[in-house]
Image 1 (cartoon, rainbow, N blue to C red):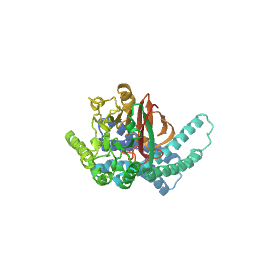
Image 2: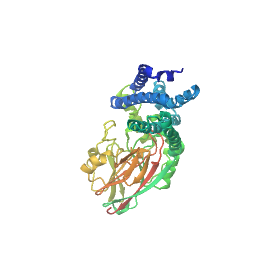
Image 3: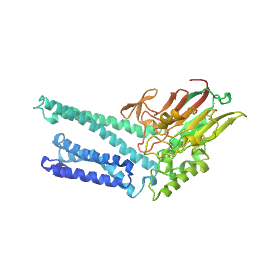
Image 4: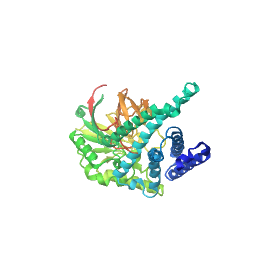
Length: 449
């Protein structure tokens, strides 16, 4: 009798719970080393998921595969627990080799495999949970007293296999093809006080490179698309890296190939503060942030705007004002050092004003309410949620929920505009499906919307 079949017997419930709790405790302890208090609820949820995973297998083993032979049960258990084992491995390996020291491609593929298998297993959960609810309702109605549970669940078992195959195909596509597809978005934006010299002015907007998650080939393609637009300026709205400054040197020569007429303007994203690596002290983390800033200014030759603004002039009297803030968010777990008032202090805001803000969440809560002189805000951060089905302007179905938020594309309020880029790379969840990476061309036009 193998161990799994032993602990799933009804008379061994205490042992079953002990094993589940032990797995959960180990799981939480392994993550504790990396978890800050603000993420503790997340790790606890993962621990509870481990308990659920084991108990769910106990149900399957007892009622659905009890007639399988010994080796078939072992094979089923191995496939079932593979995603969980990979997650546990993903928790243990950073104790010896931190993720930010991994080769970017290896890290991306490893996390991608875990995500594909986890989402596929989620499809299994979904189908079986519907089956269990169905069975309980019918049982209470006393309509299937004589029907064996194995026969009752047979359609659900078949459906789960079909859904798992579909899930494997879709998420496999997302983590292979989805990382390479790039869309070009052309967005005309009307500004009533735009000087005629800036009519048709092209701003190429890119965001969220997350260099630790993308290949050189992808970045090279981005640079070629940018240059093909013959941009007046390029605006980058943060998250150059995912973990650390070590990601930048491999892409430096490629990024230096971006060509513009009036320069490249950039800001920090929440990942550009070195927040997602481990440090011995706050000063060490701040030093990492300074290294990332140095790369952006000195190696890539970008105009870094950290709560400051500059005028771009054409002729003697025509100008627009480009301001950039450090990361500022309505979400507490993200770094917030941005200061909009400081950014435009002692500046002429009677000319067209464009703000670069990594996080779009402040547009509706701060910019609209307190800074009516900002004509256009360019943001990123959301990645367009990476997985979704576009349903219409401003409304998408993302991760199973309908939401109307500043997620992607253009938004308007009176004379103010917000444009949110879907970005290029990814952070934790690798791959895209439906919400592809993009390069956006903002074309300034005079007049009212």
